[in-house]
Structure formats: structure tokens, C-alpha cells
Length: 435
Image (tube, rainbow, N blue to C red; front, side, top):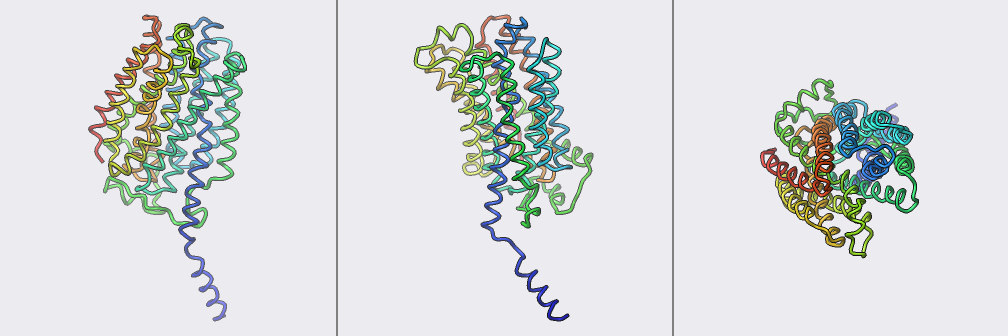
């Protein structure tokens, strides 16, 4: 008996801590799996701008009407974020994110069979809710696996994947309408099949938290000293407690308003830039070096690199002070958008549009890193959901406004005026974010 107990003690003591190298590899594996899944999410919601010309031709909708259709998705997405962030904290990000990929793919196919405004807007809005099953649950997964000191970098990679998803959604949409010459319905059918691949891969590869693989969780400290005890292992909260704590966090609420203006600028570009470059004026204004519809791809490429850069800048140059790189990038984004307003030459537009995407969306890395920074990893899903709710509430408000301005002025370049204004408002608000 004595010998057996000694052997038991020996075996338990020799298998205490997995090597740091193994944990590091697991961290990166989880990050890349979440990135891979989210890489395909935007094929389910950022393709709408490329369908607008076809929708107008078939149904005769005004741009303002289609702006409201876009707003339906954005507002349902906002509601979903407020619900699903907490759902991820409660059920786990792995299951929720996988469900979002599958359900959004199905909703897009339903949209493709639309026969009028109602059959377009209703399933498109429902799709917005399903799309909201992606971002916050993925953020929760990452905050489980990565500590405070590396969150700027990690969220930079995550937002980089989201921006690459924008590139993918733009390119696949252009291939559908410009290369394959299919009608607008196939924009909602072909690209979204990639989401199924991403969702299934995530479910097979990812584990919810380090403890599931025998590792210890990293340090998940929070800026608010009063909330530190909630990071303790085994300290479970109710949904009401999580929402209450998040909604009483003033810095997070201020940051939410700032990200709202940023997202209004971002979606102004994402939805209406394709309309701008697919218009009749641009078929004549091109300098012949590049097809105007491909100019629009410069936008998501700039967004991808901007997000990657801003996360690194916030960690390395500003010591995890998120507000400074947010303000810097938003001011530069306003300048780049203002320049786009008066540009008419194809190649010049490529550079300016790249910079607009780079600076307008770059701060997203810092904004999302603020969520676990301010409230801790255990509330990261709820905080991300609340912040994203505000972000898409603002984005939804801007869509019909931009469409109406285009209808009244006959100029699609009006989008850049609103984008520049939103960038300035985001920068001013971000000044007041204090950790």
C-alpha cells in the first residue's frame, strides 16, 4: 500500500505542468483557428454593396431604400451582439461561433431567393443576428487564452483576419458579378459556402480554455482594480451581474461611443464604395491602368494592414494605452477620406482609398483589446457584445443617411464627407477614454 501511494505521488508530481513551449504552441493554434473561422464571416454580410446595382435594376429600389435594408442587418447584428456576447460567456465561444457560421450561410441562401423588399429585408435582418454569433464569442475565446500584456497584438491579428475577410468578400463578389457574370443572387450563394468550412474547422480545432488541455490560464488582469476579484478561477457570475458590471463601467461606455463613430465610417466605406466605383462615372474616369471595380479592393487591404499595425503600435509604442493610437489613426482617416472626395483619377484613388481603409479601421484592434482590459477576461464576451451593439447601432443610422444624400445630390462621393466627419467625432470621443 505504501509503495503504491508513493508511486501515485511520484506520478502526480511528474505531470504537474506542461512545458511553456507546448502552451505557447496551443495559444497560437487557438488564435489561428479563430482567425481562420472569422476570415470567412464577412462573405455573409459585407457583400451587399455589390448586390445593390443588380437589386436596383431588377426591383427599382432607391439607394435610400437599400440603405434601410442594409440598416436592418446592422441593427439586428447590434441586438445580437448585446445578447450573444453574454451567451458566449455563459455557453462558451466555440459552440456559439460555430453555430453562427452555419446559420448565417443558410440565411444568405434564403436572401438570394428574394422577390421584393420584404423578402429581402427580413431574412437579411435575421442574418444579421446570426452574424452576431461570431465576433464576441471569438473574442471570448482569445481572452481565455491570452493575457493582458499581449492583447493588443492578439486583437491586431484577430481584426487583421476580419479585414482579410473584407478582402475576400470584395474579391469573391467581384468574381461573381464581374468575372463569372452571374446576377446578384449568386453573391449570396457562392462566397458564403466558405463559412461552413471555417465553422467546422473551428469546432474541431479549438478548445474553450487552457484548462481543457491541461494548461493554466494566463494572467488576465483588468485595469479596474475593483473588478480584479472576478478574474479568480471558479468565480461564476449570473448574466445580470455581468451586464450590470459592464454597463456601469464608464470608460467602456465612452469607448463604445467612439467605436460607434468609427464603425459608421467603416460601413460607410464598405457598403457604398463598391457603388461608387461601379457607377457610370467611373467607367469613364479610369486612367486605363486598372479596372475601376478592382480599385475598391484597396479599401479592405488597407483595413487589414491598418488593424495589424494599430494593435502592435498600442502595445509597443504606447505601452498598452489604447486611446492614443485610436485618436492618431482616426484623425489621419479623416484626412484620407476628405482627399477621396475630390479624386477622379483611377491610380490616385487606389492610394487614397488604401490609406482611408488603413486609418479608419486600424483602431478596431485597440478598441476590442479595451474590452478585456477594462472588465477582465470572464466578462470579455459581454463587454465586447455591448460595445459592438453601440458600434452597429451607429453604423445602421449612417446607411440610409448616406443613401439619401446620394439620391438627392446624384453624387456617390458624398460618402466620403460623412466618413470624414465620423472619423473626427470618433477621435474627439476617444480622448476621454481612460483606463
